[in-house]
Length: 246
Length: 197
Image (tube, rainbow over the protein chains, first blue to last red):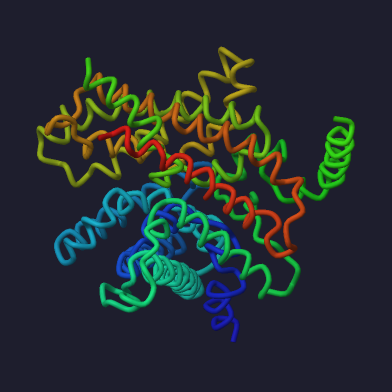
C-alpha cells in the first residue's frame, strides 16, 4: 500500500513540476512539440531511475560530507549513458533536445530526489519514487507540449489537428508562450489541488538548501514568506497612499 | 573584432539566456524578489561563468579533443564546475570576507545552475562565420551571457515588486502570476530578435 502511495504521490500530490516547482528549465524549453516532451520525459525518467537505484544502494557507503559531489558524479555518469543511447537510437530527438540532454545533470528533480528520498530509503521504494516522479514529470511536459504544439503549430505529434480551423498562434511555441502556459497550468494545479497550499519555489525542494547561505537568510524559503506577508501589505498600503498623494 | 561584437550583443539581447534560451530559470524566479539579491546573484553567476569557461575551454580543446574523449564532456564539465565553485567559496571566505558575504552565499546554488553548465557547453556548439568560437570569443560569449542574465534579473526584479502588490485572482497569486509577468517581459525581448539578421 505504502509503495503505491510512493508511486502516485509524484504524479499528482507532489508533482515535481507543478507542485514542487523543480526542473523548470527543461519544462519551458523543450515543450514546443509533444514529441520532444516525451523524449525529454523519458530520458529524465531513465536517469532518475538509475540514479535513485545507485544512490539508495550506496547510501551507507557515501560519506555525508561529500554526498552532493558523489551524487553529481553518479548522475553525470548515467546522463552520459543516456546521451549515448539517444544519439545512437533516436538522433532526431538528440537534435531537437540539443543542449538540454546533457543539462539533465543539473535538473533539480534528479538531485532533489537523491537528497530527499534515495539517500534515506532502500532500493525498492526508491525505484517507485523515481517512477512516480518520472511519470509526473513526463505527464506535465506532455500536457504543456500538447497545448503549445496544438495552439502554436496546429499539429499534435506532427499530425495536423486544427489546421484550417484555427490559425496557428506562433507566439505559443516562442519563449513567451512557454512562460504563459506554465503559469496557467500552475494556477490550475493550485486551484484543483484544493488544499490551499500554493506551489512555491521554496528551499524545501532544493537539494542545495543545506549548504546555501541564501536559504539560511531566508531569501528563497517559503517559511519566510509568512513573516514578510504583513510587511508586503504595509508596503502596498504605503504605495497606494503615495499614489494618492500624487 | 566585428565577430566579437556580434557575439557579445547576441549573448546579451537576442539569445538572452533566461528569456529566450530558458537557462537559469530557478534563480530567475527564486532570487528576483529583491533588487539587491538579484544583483548579487547575477554578479556571482557572471564571475563563475567566466571562470568556468576559462577552465573548461582548454580542457575540451587540449585534453578531450586530443584524446578523442568527447563523450566525457558532460561529466568532466560538471565536476570541474563543482570543484571550481567550491574552491572559489573557500578562497573568498578566507581572504575576502566582505565579498563572500555579498556573493558567496549564492555560490552553492550556482553549482546546479544550468546556465553555467549551459554556457560552457554552448561555447562548443555555437558558430560564428561558419566556424567554432576561439578562446577569446568563448570568454566574450560567457561575459555576454552573464550580463544578459543580470539584465533579465534586474528588469524582472523591478516588474516583480509591482506584481507582488497586485490584486491577482486567488489561484494566480504567487508563482503563476509571476510566470505570466515573465511571459510579458519575454515578449519584450522577442523584439531584439531582428538584431541578429
